[in-house]
Image (tube, rainbow, N blue to C red; front, top):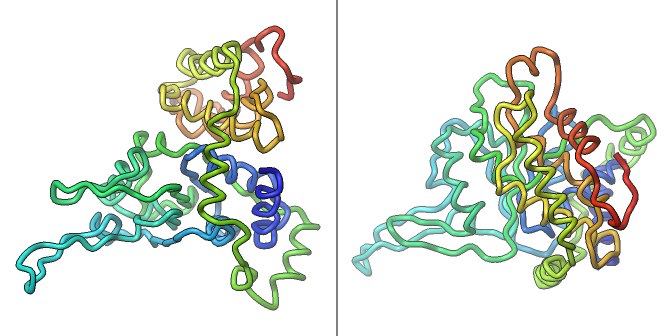
Length: 316
């Protein structure tokens, strides 16, 4: 597992230079059977991250450019009447792929955004009373720009909750940006990217992550962290029970990538901000005081006591 994850991460870093932590969260999300929301300003490599991860795995990949005129059937597919057979036949949409890259998801209307809800949660599509199952593994990597809000539709809480993790790439440091200029100015690195793993290998890694042990004390600690988000006065809407499940799955993936067969509190600390922050809604007073959901999650990590006797140090 170490070797496969290392190859995928190194392959993605050929495109997204100097962002190993972001790439690791993307891998954690993939192995936790979740979906990733990449939210940042234009030009920092949101789409490049999604495409590089998709191309590093020899799976079926599709890309959807979300626009205001996009219809739900453009995502899920449509039933078309066949004159020769005298019946309707289903034409699958781009969501029928192992990795679906949704570019600028907040550009589409709420009706089109909602077409992804069933796909992301239940890994199936229902069209005209017929249900079609999506092939495993299935992952949605969506990007959005939080700054340029003209002509956009903010993701509702119900849809944000279906994303396992949210990451912001941020600007590269000067050394990484110089390396990017040297390596990427002459050609597009995505054009030369070759797969370093396949669907069967990724599915085996996912099954390995499912078997990672989590002690009752650490499970209780995960529940305490999520419950604490519902009791903070700065939060109007805390994390849901779905967030608890996603936090546990992400912690298992983080432990496996670290070479352990069991979860320690540090694994929860590493994934807590990406998994929990985007699910919470701040009060008006907290927003006016320039508090962020990330600040609140970090404060909770400091306040909730770590279970006694658990393995691992406390890196908060």
